[in-house]
Length: 112
Image 1 (tube, rainbow, N blue to C red):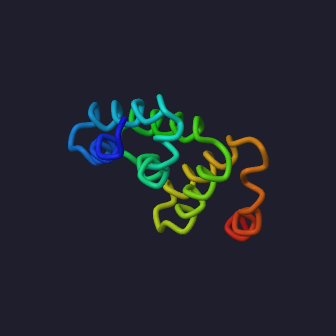
Image 2 (tube, rainbow, N blue to C red):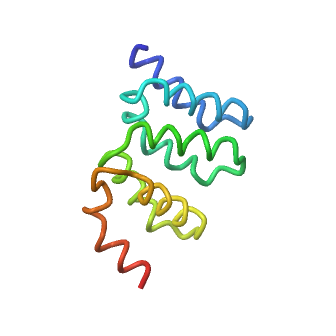
Image 3 (spheres, rainbow, N blue to C red):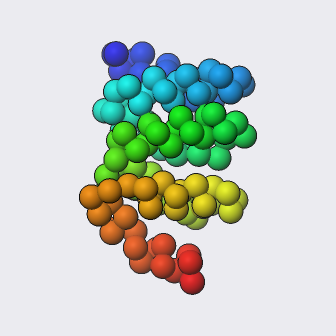
């Protein structure tokens, strides 16, 4: 996909219909580099009202893996919504390859 097509696809993550948001997240997962480029947008989908969208975003971010997904999720750790913080922690915990290591201090502080 071209950069313009990827931008249009990522914009669909904010569509009014959950089916469209879910399809956009799944499409981004199909190309891990596409998902990596839009990791920040996918992380915001972790608190979507639809469990389908949350699941698709989680899977897309797992396909990215590593520090890109962990870095995007770490930004959500400061969110005022506890559900957003929980989703971010769950994603960071699911990542492999020591992706959480750079965020260990912040996570420890938040968990108190």
